[in-house]
Image 1 (cartoon, rainbow, N blue to C red):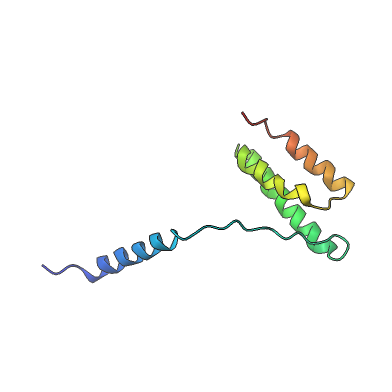
Image 2 (image 1 turned 60 degrees about the horizontal axis):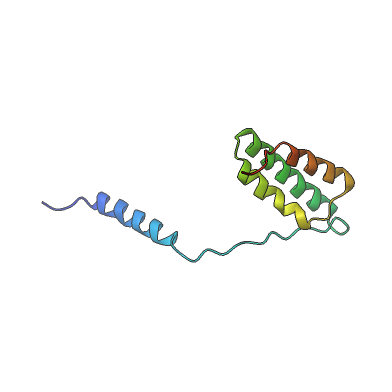
Length: 96
């Protein structure tokens, strides 16, 4: 009996997909826009990150939320933004 070409094709695609995920992983550094030169970009990135953290907190993915907030450690925040970040951090239980 000859193997079905469709099954062989699917198996080949799965193998390629698996092998593609086996490469060396590098950490990506997020470049923060400067609020002085790119205020709109900085505000948009800040809002998206805060929205993501809120969703992670709602899902009780506290480790991921904590890691997402780490991006603000080197971020030039306004006092208002710092209050928002502090409020989000307060919603995350301390790590055990």
